[in-house]
Amino acid sequence: MSQFFESLSALAQSAGLADLTGAALRYLFPLLALLILGRCARSLLLFQKEPEVWAWLSGPGGARLAVTHWETLLGRAKTCDVVLDYPTISRTHAVLTRYDDGSWTISDVGSKGGIQVNGESTSMAAVDFGDRIALGGVEFQLVPITKEQEVIQASVRTRAGDEIRPGVTLFFLTVFQILTAFQLMLRAEEPLPIGSAFLILTGIQWAFFLFMRILRRTGFEVESIAFFLTTLDLAVIASDDPSELRKQLVCIAAGLMVFLIICWALRDLERAKKLRYVAAAGGLALLAINLLFGVEQYGARNWIYIGGISFQPSELVKLCFIFVGASTLQRIMTKRNMFLFIAYSALICGCLVLMSDFGTALIFFVAFLVIAYMRSGSFATIALIVTATGFGGVLALRFKPYILNRFSAWGHVWENALTTGYQQTRAMMCIASGGLFGLGIGEGWLKYVAASDTDLVFAFVSEEWGLIMAILMVLAVVCLAAFVARSASVGRSSFYTISACAAAAILLIQTMLNVFGTVDLLPLTGVTFPFVSNGGSSMIACWGLLAFIKGADTRQNASVAVKLPPRKEMEER
Image (cartoon, rainbow, N blue to C red; front, side):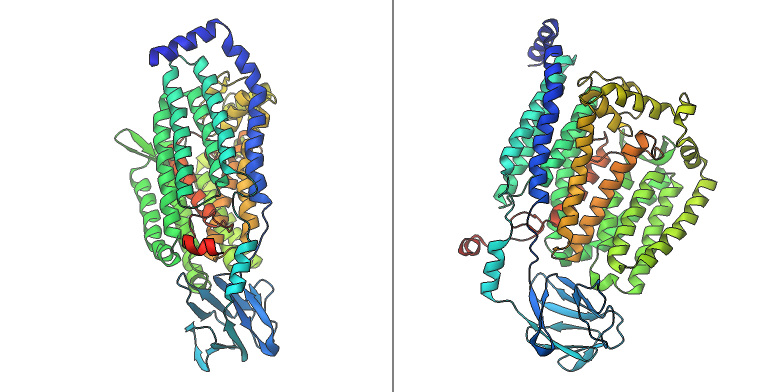
């Protein structure tokens, strides 16, 4: 088989077929990419947002207020999930929580008027339908929705896959992958490893798609975007160093396993909440190992080598951090737990600063701000945190000259084109030389510059594939973030919503730091581009982050994290 591919490649090169196909595919690739991403974006961004009503709060005068979340903040503030405009009710008074088994509890979150259930004062109590709940002396009653209302809600909800057929999108993606492999193989000295790698990737994505259909999930747009970006990742590696393909395929498979494990954990929120203790300890343990045994590379001590295999523990800590941050609303609304989360975040960022991993520390800080704001809803609190962190940043620059060197080169790379600005100046020249449609896959020069397939991958894709493809690559990540933003307002549980927002924020800030660092709009921080940069740890972490985004999908038959009713019940609906 190897001899056949090598003979075919030699024949194609002698006949000039590689040049002819390369010229044609330069214009075809952006069209295929636009078709794939356009179909995914249409389904993810244009679905009708229908909040699900889980119960009603019947108030004075018979007024009914819909309870549309599993953790519902009750109070007088406009930011509450259910606004109760009574002077005796505190701005944030109580949290009404629904559990997986359908039971309910109500918890006081530091109100002045307190809460009563059936006439008895309490700080936290179980609530059944029909119970009387007094908040600051104002009485309400928890009322269930009827079976007819359940049927109506199910019938009007958007069904994943109705707007577009995910199988058709995957077919176009497969064509994209076949043409990419074909173009790379024509120019390769050893075409067999490249062809095998893309064949395995195609097989993995179709097997995963069929597995999801067996689970009765009809939405595959989020995964299709990830597989599209992963295709570019393999293309970059095949062009730069084909010997890395096998390792990256193993990491893609490992990432899918992490994706499924996190989705399984999210299927039971009580189980997920308990895992936060394991996640917290695991995250700190990974960073402690990194501090003790880490190896410095490119100025940051964030690499671990075991038996010739290297990985970055800080990438996996992102998943632990989100698990800790997205614990239940009723728990983190207390000041004690908010301070504990701040301390945990500061400890992680402090470890990263000690390792000189400034880029990852910045990513964690942005994720922390997202979680902290969604928990507190206070701009004043966030402003105080940002100010304190600013002083910490000044100290880091004072005692970490490596970070200071990065900042000193920022905005002056052309003045230091042969020293601190070497990578970025070459990257920008390659972006310009690639034009809109690129020089052709495998025809770039940037591959000879250090970190071209990781830190500078935006320029790598721009040079070989063209600026249009590089921009589509960025828009793919933006599409995932926009989907999370649209889904947030109708999220079932704050755990799903906050974890998805934090995951999307991490992916988005990584993209911004990678792209803007490459073109000198921001300092070059050594942050990878999600799913595209070469790196096993990054690939596994990105698939793990994608699981939180998948868990927040509220469309019917979409999220793996949400249990579906039995088939018979679904058919009756």
